[in-house]
Image (cartoon, rainbow, N blue to C red):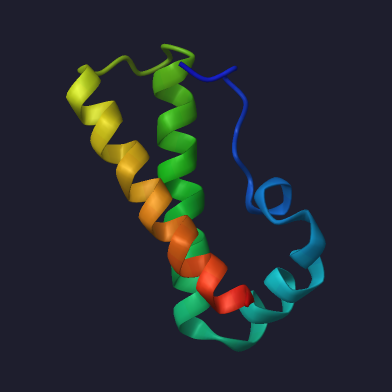
Length: 78
């Protein structure tokens, strides 16, 4: 279990804050990826804090989805 802290993109990629912002403004696909990441991340945070408890498998699948999105975002930032 995590420390119940959100994994915001600015925290995950602190050296790329400006690039993330610029890509959100200029690249529609990146903006969609970032929004999907934020939504999944918020859902996981609500599950971790038991605001919206779910089955372990559901939480695990969402964590896998967050990692996939993070990997795709990281490839944009390279």
